Amino acid sequence: PLRGSDCISRIDSMTAIKNILSVARYERKMLLRTTKFRILGGLGIAIPIIQGGVMAVLEANGMDFGSVIGLGAYLPFYMYSYLQAVVIAFIVGDFRAADERAEIYEVLAARPISTAELVTGKYLGVVGALVTLSLVVLVLALAIQAAKISITKTPFTVKPYLIYLLLMNMPGLVFMSALTFFLGALLRRQTAVTLITIAYGLSVLFFLGRRY
Image 1 (tube, rainbow, N blue to C red):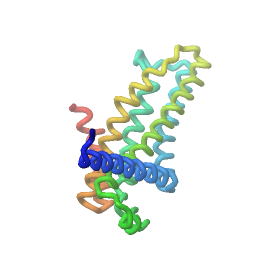
Image 2: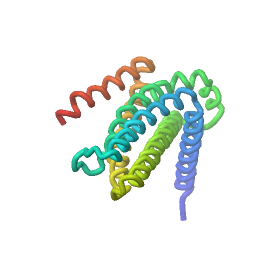
Image 3: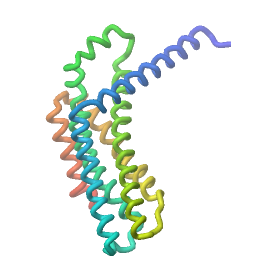
Image 4: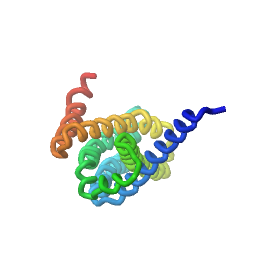
């Protein structure tokens, strides 16, 4: 039989998980509804998809891009991974200021929720919203590829898309979101967080990515 302290510990754990999931669900819904997220997310999706569409048209017209397997899947996700960093910098870096504008701390003061639960829930909510954008890129890229093979009659496989999504896009999403959250909590200035995050992304693109 469980002792009283064990029962209380389990109840506290379940309450914490429930609070985190509630905050994550609320944060994801609110983020998807904001104009800034829709504009930046739309641009982040549109640019790699347009690039993928141009490639598909060129391939359909006989241009050969060599023997690179999954190139049509690689380039959209490669480009989106860097654009995603810009979206994260502007959206996630503003989480403290956005909460203060929405007076969320006054609302939470009346509820039994810890700071750790709030931050964890907000992080999971932001990651959930960004994963939604990544899945939109995946679906649109697959649609472009399907349209291309209907013309070229070339073999079609989903595997490269899933590999690039899981091994290229998702790790970068989780890391950049965590980094931006940490900088936001440390610096508490959106401008500084945004500049540092974008500078880091550019350093990876032009320097670290080539050397390592």
